[in-house]
Structure formats: C-alpha cells, structure tokens
Length: 570
Image (cartoon, rainbow, N blue to C red; front, side, top):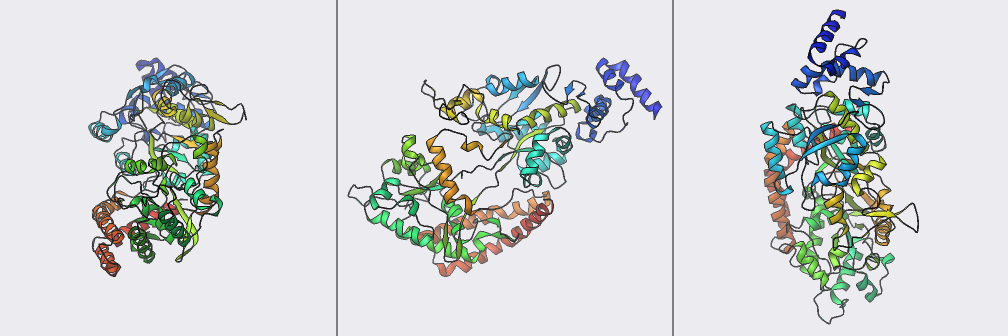
C-alpha cells in the first residue's frame, strides 16, 4: 500500500504541480475512491489522487479540497469557468447579462459559458447534444424528463448526485427531511439521483374556478355562500344562464367557459371529475394505494352524464371543443363569462385593477351523490429535471457545483433565483417590513418582463429551488393575499394528489409507450361524443371494452408496479 502511494506521488510530481499538491495530502487516505465511478473515464485518470484528497477532507472535517472550499464562500478559491446548457424562454434576455448569474459569480467564483437554444427548438438541440457527445458540463433548466434521466444516466452521461448530496448539500437534505416525498420521487429505478427538481408546495392552486363577483352581487349571492356540492353548483349556473346577470337584456351569458387550447375537454375533466371521486381521466392512485385509469371507474360515467347535462342545457361553453383560451378570455372581456378554471380572474373576465381582482371568489371543492366528501386535486409540487451534471465534470467540479446548487435550496438562495435581489423588481413594504412589494417598471414593461429579461431565467423556466410554503404569502399585495385566503378556505383542505412523481423502468416505459397514444385518442374522442350527445350512455360499456382491447389493463398493472416500488422507498 505504501509503495502504491509513493508511485502515485512521484507521477503527480512529474505531471502537474496542482496534482502534486493534491497527492501531498493523500498520505493517510485510502487508495480507493467510492465516488470515482461518478466521473468520466478521462476525469478518473487525471484526478484520482485529487478525488481521494477530496473525500478525506470531507470525511475528516477539513474545509477544503484542492481549489474547492467545503464551507463558506467563495466556493472555489481561484475562479473557474464551466459550460452550461439551458432552455431560453421567449421572455429571457441574455443569460450572461442576468443579475442572478452575476451575483452568484461574485459569491462563489464560479462562472459559465452559456448555450441557450430557444424553448421552441430546445428539445431537439438537447437531444442532439447528448447523443453526439457535444454537451455541457452543467444542464440547468434543461427539462430532463424521467425517461431521459434513466436513459442518459444508464449511459454514464448524467452523473449520480446522491453521494454528493449526502456529503455537501445540507439544504437539499433539509428539504428531503421536511418533504419526504421528494427523494423517492427523484430517485431512478437503479437507485441513483441524476437530476434535481423544483419543489414548490405553494398554498396557491395553479388553477381554480373563479366566479364572477358582479354576477353574484346582481343575484344576491354572497361569496361565502357559494355551493359545496354539484347540485348547488348546477342551480347557480342555471341562474347565471337565465337571470341576465350581465344586464344587457340578451341571453348571451356563458355560465361556465372553458380555457383549453387543446380543445379536447381536459380543461374541464381534469378538474371536475374529482367531484365524483375520480381524480383523473387517466392514471391516478387512491387512498389505499390502488392504481386506476379514471375513465374505467364506474363514477366516470356519472361525471360524464353531468357534463352532458351541462352542455346540452348550455351551461358549458358550446365552443369548448373548438375555441382557444384567448377566445374564451375575449368573451370574458365582453362580460359574458360567469366562471372558469384559470390561474387568475383577469384571464377569465378581462384585465382589471388589482383591488377589483381581489374581490373575486373561488368556487369551493365540490361533493356529489357518489362522492360525499368535497374533493379537488393538485400536482405533486415537484418539477423534474432542472439540474444535472455530466461526465465532463471532474471531481472538484462536482463538489463545487453541488455546493453551488445547494445554495438555491436555502431560503435565501431560493428567493434570489426566483425574484432577484432587493431594489430591482421588489422592495420591502413600508406598511410591514416583513413583507415585500413589487417595484413596477416605468418604461412600459411589466414586472415579469423585467424579471425574465434582466434578473433571472427562473421566469418562464423551472429551475432548481425549494420554494417555502410561506413564500407566496410574503407580499404586501391585496390580490395575492385574497387568493391565498380563498385557496386556504375553499380548496386546500380538500386536496388530493393524483399520482406521486415517480419513475418507470425502461421496460415499464416501453409498455406504457406501446399503449398510451391509442388509449388517449380513444378516451378523448369518446369523451367529447358523450358530452355533446353524439353517443348515448347506453354505449358506455362498449367504450370501456374498447379501452380494454387497447391495453388499458396492462397500463394499470405497469403503473401499479411502479407505484409499489416508489411507496417501498419512502
């Protein structure tokens, strides 16, 4: 063992002074490195002694490894420049001019060259790079799907991150502790973590049914008295249709408009089927851990009978399968919309002052005769594939970049990447110094245009961060506070997760891919026909039989296997 170490030391002296320095600290370290398998073959040959020194420093409580400081800032003693690839959203300015990267450079001594194809062509450019070998060291906002993580992880292009997380990333470990679903959700079937996520368990729902406050006032309905079951909801929609709440003397009201550019109806199904105990028209898991394909459930037929009733009675938009979301918004601007699912009232009813928008209520989660509990659904709060490192990174780069990204999972770092520093688009409120308020541009741009153009690529692109539950409420913003209050009252107590964010093996993915397109086409085509009355509900069994012939039971079994594996790793 001593001879082996001496040879390594002499070789290092002949090659590089820097490697000599790394080997000089290796007298008491093991000659084998458990993390070398994470690096590329060339990195292994050139930096094996450096790797051993890095491990000893970490395990022995040292504070540096070569050029890397294991504690504090800057992260590296001498500045380094790495290659980074990410998707450039349409709202983005040049990444090399963004405030976020400038601040991080000054804080960490880590700089980047940027390859940022536009979002429209990014998937193509990313695949070309990864398949040709001409890819960056850092994939940042590269939208790596679970399938891509499995594929390129198995090929050794994406490096496993879990050992580095355990050694160098206290903020990510704190997130795993507080949000126990995250670690199993980003762990591939081979046990490795190849990419880090955005994690955001906001109290705000990304989509809610907003109700026209002016129409409620006209009908004498108080927001706190909105219905809590589908029968009461139907009765209110009938009043919206019949009692001329927009006051123009015409029967032009659209009680429930649909904002769905795909024109397949999923903008309604994905929300309202939950009222009947069916959490998705496709795959979901129930409270007992059983996987369902929603359209195969008995209650799905009950839900679609209700949709057919609303459509035939002109409560649902008669253009729901043909118009765009912009068309539906234009109808709201004309004063014709009574309610709709969207992120904010302005997208349903037209632009308005913030104080006015704060008066619009959210329809509560609803119950039904077949589902006595009020129910709504929401996502997992996890967005996959926002940060990965490739085999073009050596050991020091791995450690440095894992420390760099770990900062973004701290409360301070998450705020920085999300909103930028104080004084650009936000400042502390004079009314309450614990709250923030926006600084509105005076040059004709809105806040988001400044945020995405000058401050951070987080605008329009999921990036690695942990958004705390309290972040959305940290604003002196009357509309934001009202939105949170309505969400907490009307939706959050009744939320159910449709399906955890989980991986499929390559074999499982192959099974799902074999059947999914045909099943989706069959589901969407028949769903529309049942809603508009082109098919009678006597044909429902024939529809589910067709779904069986297209492989729906095989897909259910495959997802059940994947879910059971995910649940066993919690």
